[in-house]
Image (cartoon, rainbow, N blue to C red):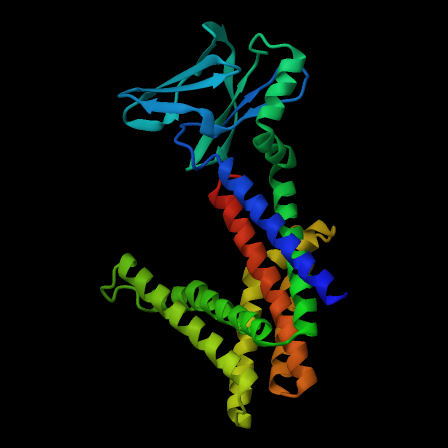
Length: 346
C-alpha cells in the first residue's frame, strides 16, 4: 500500500472511530437522568420508534417519578409511583400525549445505572405512518444504534479494532521508527498493568486478607503498583529497542514483554469475540474455549523471540506485530468498556 494511501486510511479510521464514539455518547441511556432504560413507540406490527433518553426532563418526588418530553411539538408526560424504601422498583406506568391517555407498559429490562425497565407506548400517539417515519428520522441516532442491537455494536467496535490493528501493523512495518516503537512498548506496558491489577492484586489481597488493610486502601495500592509496573515495562521495552543490552538483560526484558503481551491479548476479549463472530463455538465448547489462550500464548512467545533476537528484521517484526496486536487488543477492550459504561451492552 502506498504511503499516502496508508496515511489517509489511518486518518479515515480515526475519523470513523471518533464519530462512532461521539454518537454513542450523545445517545447514551446512562448519561441522561431517567428512571427507565428506554422508551419505545410500538404501533401495531410497524417498526419500533426509539426515543432518546436525553429528551426527557425527569423529576423525582417523595413517592413518584415524572418525566416530560416534547414529541412533534406536543407534550408526552409519563409518571411512575414507587415506595420510598424501594426507590428502584417502579410501579405502573401512566402516560399521556397531548392530553390523551395512551397505553404504556414494561417490555423488559436492561442494565442502565443498574437494572432498569424498558417501556413501550402501545399506540401511534395519534400520528400517521409518515409522521412516525419522520419521528424515527428525527431521532435517527438512537434508532440506528438500537437497530444494531448489542451484538451488532460489539461487532462494529471489533471491526474497527481489527482494521486499526492491521493499518497500524502495516504502517509500523513500513516505518518502524519512534512512533511505531512507542506504540509497541506502550502495548506491553498496558498488558503488564492489567496483569498486576487483575491477577497479582487479587492473589496478594487473598494472601494478605486480615492484615488490617481496607478495601479502599488496597485499591489504591494495587492501582499504584499496576501503574508503576506498567510504566516500568513500557520504558524497559522501549530501551531494549534503542540500546544494546547484555544477553541476560535482553532475555529478561524480552520475557517480560512477552508476558505483558500475553496478558493484554488474554484480557482484551477481542480474540474471543472475533473467533465467536467467525462461527467457532468458543462459549459452548470447553476445548474450543481454550483456543484464545493458545493464540495469546503463541503470539507472546513469538514477540518475545523476535525482541530477544535483536536484529533489524526481527526488531521490525516485533514492532509491527506488537503494535498491531496492541491497537487491536486495547481498541476492543476500550470499545467493550464504552458499550458497557454507556448502557448499550450488559
